[in-house]
Length: 168
Image (tube, rainbow, N blue to C red; front, side):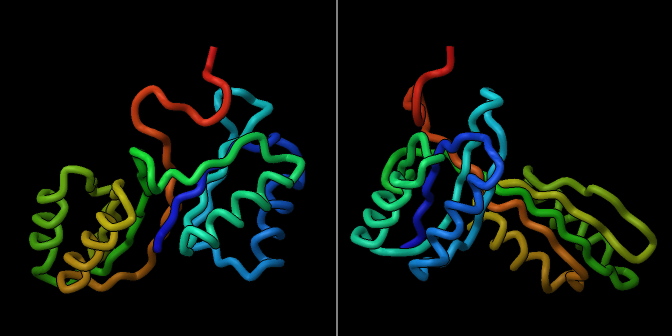
């Protein structure tokens, strides 16, 4: 089962490496990983997507709490949360197919034509991983995908619940 784990870390050199090595040493796969400083420059938020049943995820959380840099950790999957990912995709557009690609972009409110040349279009799309996959599936028959980049999942609890101490 797909799981989203969110953790707050001390924003220090090596913190990410220590968490990643914990996963590697135990054979856990990381499907997606994002990390960046929070509103507090001393703290970073790490969001990772992995797979596993409840026992595996509980073990990951318990072991991660032992890493000295980890301030707080939670499995957001079972909680009401918001998640978003960024996709940038460059497609090759054959003669006469550009209107079909443009129509596909217009059908998706979260899609934006980012750049265009005579034979290529670069599109930016934001949404959940499932929404990105669905967009790509719709786009593939219309144009040849030349390259793409995905940011990985960023996620937060919905509403007033926060991970760690509330912002002042």
